[in-house]
Length: 499
Image 1: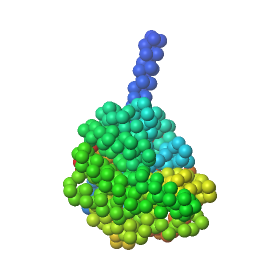
Image 2 (image 1 turned 180 degrees about the horizontal axis):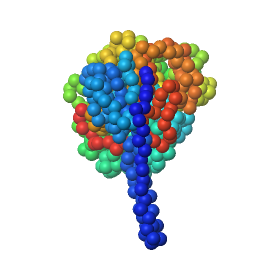
Image 3 (image 1 turned 90 degrees about the horizontal axis):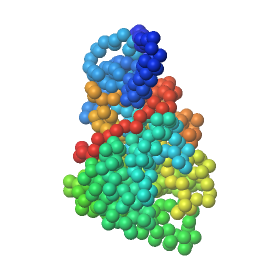
Image 4 (image 1 turned 120 degrees about the horizontal axis):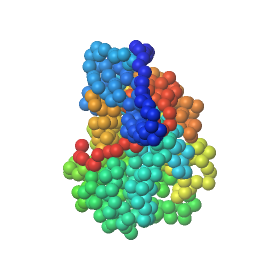
């Protein structure tokens, strides 16, 4: 892959003076205010260089074709054959490469007690071909949901390099119930509820009301589907037997807990008529419940994550079991096979990371138990390479399906399409130049997450991003991040519409 510059243009700002000092001060203030507004609203244009990506195979969810892609002002302005570069335009030779839409990861955890913030999370994401990531803000009792969004946006403006969407987690449904319209107006129309905590059952009726209010406001509800009562029962039995180390995590969080919660989640979606998005589905039993709901025409959507596609519960038998702790836990080979088949028949709509960044020492803390542990792994850099290598190249899914579950479908479900998730005229120029034949050995030292390691260290993986473009700016190239913190944006999203 080569790049060249055909010319250079410079912007000139002319200032007209005046002898009146007061008018000069007024003019200066006005210019600064306008410049600030311009920076806020047109950041993409300021940072982006016009580009022409030539000769690559453009891949969308509905097909592939060889074409050039012209980028001007941060958006795609033309797709065609033998496009001619204009003065000052950088030309990127993508011959023999794939040109993919930037990935959209709707399930990421950043900041707080985790070691990745918006900056380091962005670095890992962009190196893995993900240009839009997400985060969760918490809405405690009595809190204003839009105010939580505002506080998070201030951090995004300082730290983010990738673009960002936000979801609000709800633990007090009565407080959140009248605020759904406010979230939609704020441009962040999604919430998350948890069935795995003891507060869910006493408030189940109010959560059902919340789900209905969310649907009426065009807000998509995400759900963590594990049944709290089954989890509590299992924990008590294992504790009585002295089986409390994390080696027993699979027994502590059985597939029954996930299946039961999925059944209840489907019932809530059916009763309310509202859309529901089940996060990190791990087992065949839970998957079948979600698939049956979809077969009945319910707006029920299923996400899985990399750990269930590439790892199984045998990892809990080793001394480094803590590295593989997640909720729900790793499952059996039959569950993994069912998830791959569901990706192929398109009854799983999204593969997202559920990225949670802990240090290796924290993950290996020997004091962890089946009820007190550090769940989650860092995956932002490895999601797409692993899925391409084990999915596309292994013949389990097509290249178009790979694009669908990592870009197009999440963009559609979370109100970003067609601005994100596709390569089309008028869309943001979020592009990944992908080398489908490059084989690397995964190394801890190459990971850009602040964790500094990967659970896939030593794995051989084929298919990697060569260059990542976010809104027309080359943000990752030659193994390095090229953009500055603060160039990412909090994206305003449209209300829920059935894809």
